[in-house]
Image (cartoon, rainbow, N blue to C red):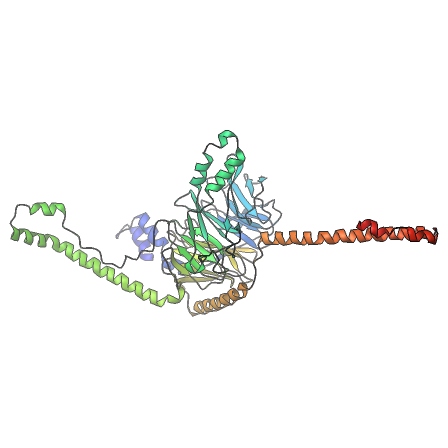
Length: 538
């Protein structure tokens, strides 16, 4: 790495230009091995649920259970701005709006209210509108017109094949940086769904709006997005032919890479990397390249020669290309041998079932108790980073699934949020159960790759995750829809009891009044008087 820097300064060596040097420097594994805690940002009074760098990387935005949003100068540890979010429950997301010069912050919280805060220095204004994501609804907000459009209601098949589809509680939504018209959602089941917003835009231009039927237009808009363009899940988690779910694992977070790949983390399961749309796992890289044919120019020179001379000239012309082909063959064989060796050594970190959609898996962490995030890291997204219930941050190589760094990110519990810097290599912000934010930079004097302690911790996490998974098989996940249904059933059960009690109280009251009157009446008349309870019953 330092040799590259020296060559860059001197302007010597192959690929010593700024761009190529930055690429090699930013992708250096040595930087990952030198990651260490740089500073803590400590001002919140509750768990920090979201951290996000601004588009230019100069500021960091955070939100917490204390309902406050802070904007940090993360390099000095000071807050540039702090304000109450206006929410009534825990803040779960806070980001600056792109192309807003870091002056507009969008937040959402457990109260189901999205909020926009915009302003300069010390003044702010807030605008809120209702939204619900736990019911599977995806809503689009146009900041120019301040209007919202319901894009779709994501539904999933019930565990019983004959049951109706139910709304899917969503944990994650992310746009594809390669194809901005695509977005992925994931949540209460094992599937990652990718939708194409262009279909909804086509439906909105179908002419129904011209007829003034806004409700029909909204239905057409949502119906066009009802079917995802991709529906991804590892084979052992997919529903069977009858539609029954294979297990209880669900996605807590899913994100796109710059190359269009999707990484998804599952509770009590591994992290899986899905191939980009239109591509499958490359199984032809180990095949030797075909022998190159002679160029047309070389064939033209042999047109007027006799057969013997023509063959001799072709042999001479193809000698350099034959040597190059042999060199390429040797390189291909060496790469295949390296891949075979790596695959054998890292088999316990690989998935037991890799198909055309799942191209890699990552394990050793623990995702059971809280909603974990997952992200790509590096100038070319060459690493995958995740938190864990054990309080550590895990960084794997994207292509081979090998653990490259283990960091202690939280001493009280889980690490949930991870935010790589948008352009600085190996710079990361994390948060979890503790009330602070930790900034990690590659400033350690010595490189420290993970050792035996990391392997032992990963083995313990794997055993713990297996036990937690077996316990959850016999548990029922109480979604908001199930809780609401139970409350309605309880209310319906109590209503007849309240009516019966009211009738009994009314009957007792009338009976007491009748007894008082009986004291003054003739006992003979009492035999002919009707029973008050008979009147109530009739």
